[in-house]
Amino acid sequence: MRKDVIKILFAVAVLLVLALFQKTQAIGEDFFVEFSPENPGSNTLVSAKANSYSFDIDRASINWVVNGQTKLKGTGEKSFSFQTGNMGTQTVLSVSITTESGAQLRKDFSFKNADVDILWEALTYTPSWYKGKALPSPGTLIKITAVPHFSGATSPTKLIYNWSVDFKNKPDISGLGKRSFLLRSANVFDNNKISVIVSNYDKSITAEKNISITVGQPKIIFYEENLLEGTRFNQALQKDFQLNDNTINIRAEPFFFSIGNLEKLLYEWTMNNQKIATEEFPNILSLARREQSGRSNIGLKISNRINIMQSAENSLQINY
Image (cartoon, rainbow, N blue to C red):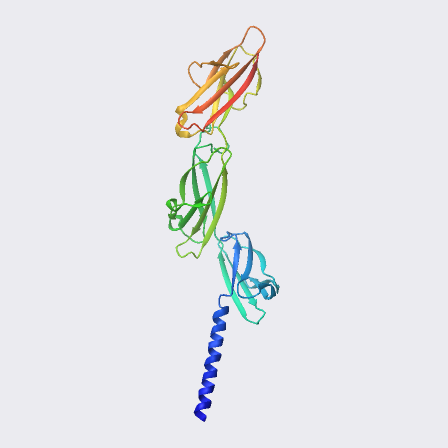
């Protein structure tokens, strides 16, 4: 009899252990948290949302704790926003949930506040005096470089870079130390969307950045070329220009054409819609003052013989 009781008690104990084990297994991964952005940098506002497929999250008590301090607590408080810390610090988010059945769950998330910048340089022509940024035009090359800001003395060459262009992963330009690449720009007025995820070897530190590069058109700006002073780059010629001297040399500066194709540019000058030729330099047109008053419409089209997508036009009116 005693042995039977022992067997029954043992069987009950086993059943209780199995039930507890099954319950633990059932709720061990009961909820997950989604973050936006997924890989936040330093001083970044992060949106977090808890969800579950095995219990009613809206009836659960949820506690959000950042670096040991409770920031939000209540039934159904499944959404929460917080700010990551400064560069080199760590932000720890703890999410504790008590389900409707009384099960207690918790997950901790650590954000090592790293960051990354994406720099870009269009390989297009601008005059040496130009203070602005060279802009991409259709079919030009753009140099893209990631500049990671990770704590410690982590070398950029020791990090792994995962690039995507226009929402497509680019494994051929991704990998260890691959922090830069050359991109062929999109069509005019389109955007190139660039994204990079940078991480260390064990993915304990991750940073992400997205940028959009707008592709424009090449431009032509006219300046007066003075024999004594040189080019008057301090002031561009206006659309309606009054010629007071006997002669004028008009210099055309092509902006944002491919650097490697400058010698392949074709200059087509017109006066009152009639083609005219330049004397020595294709980008400088010399005009003499007429004896009678009047006006002339000067036009110029510059096109790239190598890249037919690159062309620009401009015109001005000269009054005598």
